[in-house]
Image (cartoon, rainbow, N blue to C red):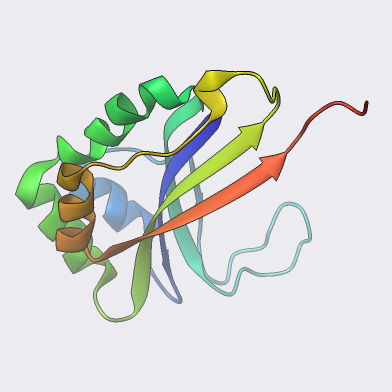
Length: 136
């Protein structure tokens, strides 16, 4: 199964300005200098994270990635402008292997439309893979 996120991170970014510019509320955000609810220590960065898909199979990834490409050239340029030279945007794909026989857990395919959109937005790709099989 897959979880897919778009994350913007900057040392001193403003999550609210990202929300206003993109017209989409994040699922999670942090603000530089504000205390973390987990540790109480202030964050050293700001972040804005949007969940594009949760617990989806590989057969649904094209649809999930299409949520980004649907933002079009204007959305890619807006993201690029928001990040500027002081931050970064990343498409994060988290793959959890839970069943070695499940075909929907195999492979990550990213089409030319997505790659082109990410390039226009100057966004990177991070793939995290976790083997979560039951003990034999």
